[in-house]
Amino acid sequence: MVSLSLGEGVLLSADSIALPFREEIQNSLRLLQDVPTLMGILSTNSKPSRFYAEFTKKTCEELGFKFILKQVGSALDPSLPDGENVEEAIIEANADPSIDGIMDQYLQQIVSPLKDVEGLHAKFHYNLYHNIRYIQPASLMLANVEVTESFTNDTPEEPPVGSVKSILPCTPLAIVKCLEHIGVYNKLLRYGDRAYGKIITVINRSEVVGRPLAALLANDGARVFSVDIDSIQEYTKRPAGPQSTQRYHLRHVVRQSTFTLEECLMQSDVVVSAVPSSNYKVETTKLKDGCICINVSSEKNFKKDIREKNVIDDLKVSLYVPSIDYDSKVITDI
Image 1 (cartoon, one colour):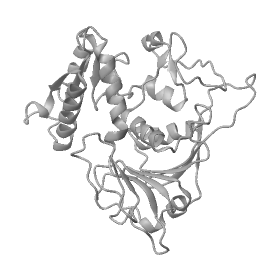
Image 2 (image 1 turned 90 degrees about the horizontal axis):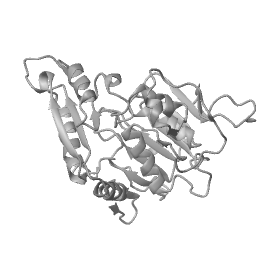
Image 3 (image 1 turned 180 degrees about the horizontal axis):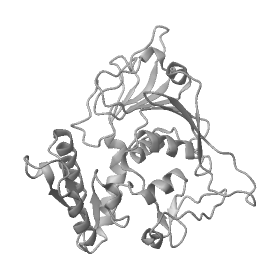
Image 4 (image 1 turned 180 degrees about the vertical axis):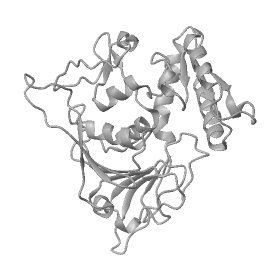
């Protein structure tokens, strides 16, 4: 859904972006004889965690997956501590041939990489940060992270024969898909460099969203300012060298930035904010005219005037995505 009023920037809800991916998944499921079964493990009784678990269950079932929500710890019995028996539940699910995928936010490395559907295992993290996009499935059975890399300056857009895409964490990937849909990624450029020329600020360097997102964007060619409470880092892609001397896949490098947040915002084509606080707001007047803003946090990190014209009668923000959740009931204008 796209909403545009006279004198306002475009309000874009994520459902229009997610729809073709949902249809692709549903069409693929129809070709399978056995529907995959996913298990979510809820080990805490906190309301946000339970909401996320129930929302995930609802979405998976709408797509056509079988979904089992296993409750342990305080989620099962409030008298138990958070995380009680979760390790046993993961180990049992790893060994259960009827379970095809596992979703858990606790003890992530215990989940078998063969059943990790969230891209949180160390093997997938290694691939993400080293810009290794395709893997041989058999490599997931190795005891350690594979550090021997074959590389090329050209990355194919589709997996080579015998390879599959390495799994990426869902929220950073969803943001990348939003930016592809919006047109931030230039399809005329070579795959792997389609964000080249774009300057992007990502606010909050969490290990779940902010840091992997900055790496993904930089690996696609963008110049990324990663903003956290105590520092600002700059992520850029290392230049290509002769393949005879190249030791690793072309991937991002990180250096400390001398810019302030205000200076980052003034030059950014895209601003992504994921600060889990209702008190944090990005100053609209500090944004570059015509920039694109994406709110990832469950709180609104942008002010209510985000889509209004500024004092010189120009649009401050050309496009605003208030939430990356698919459920249109969750997406509301600010």
